[in-house]
Length: 197
Ligand code: AMP
Image (cartoon, rainbow, N blue to C red; front, side):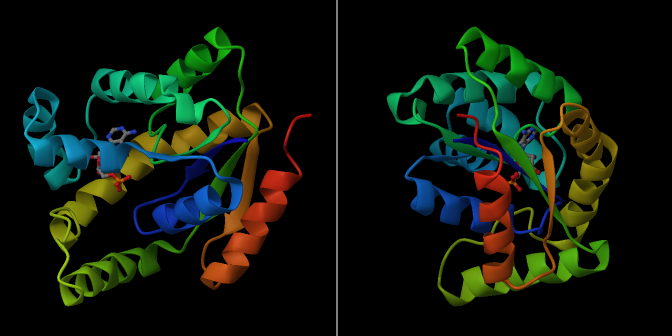
C-alpha cells in the first residue's frame, strides 16, 4: 500500500500516519521528521534547513526531493509506505509521480484530512503543552508566529496538491474534525477501497 496523507498543520497527519504504519506494517515517511533529524544531527542539510523549518516556511523542493528519493530506495519501503507531509507542492507531487513511475510503482490513494482552520492553532498549542508535560522537546515551529507561516504556506503551496490528485482520481477526503478513532476508521475504509490489485 502506498498512501499520501495530506492536510494543514495540526490536522492529525502524524497521528494517523503512525497508526497506519502499525496497521499495515509499512514505514511512515515523514519529511518533517527527516528534516528535524538532519537539523538535530547538524548534517550539512540540517544546518541549511533548520532556520527554514523553525520559521514555518517550506524547505526548497530539491532538498526534500533528494531526501525522499533516498528514503524510498531503502528496503523497508519496498512493500509500501505512508507519506506524511510530502508532497507539499505540485512540483513535489509531479516529481513523486516520476520517481514512482521509474520504479514501476504508483500511489494507491491520497487521504486528505479536512479540518476547520479555527481549530488548528489550538491543536498545535495542545501538542506543545503535552510534549512539555512529558519532558519532551517542543517543536520550535509549534508557536503562533511559525504557525501563521505554516498555514500561509499550506494555503499557497499545498492546497493545490489536493486538486492535482483529485484530477488523478486518487483523492479521498476525510473529516479530520471527528474523534481520532472515527477519523482512523474513515481512513481505513478509504485506503482499503483504493488498493490496486
Ligand atoms: P511537518 O513535520 O510535516 O509539520 O513539517 C515541519 C516543517 O518541515 C515544515 O513546516 C517545513 O518547514 C518542513 N517540511 C516538511 N515536509 C516538507 C516538504 N514536503 N516540503 C518542504 N518543506 C517541508
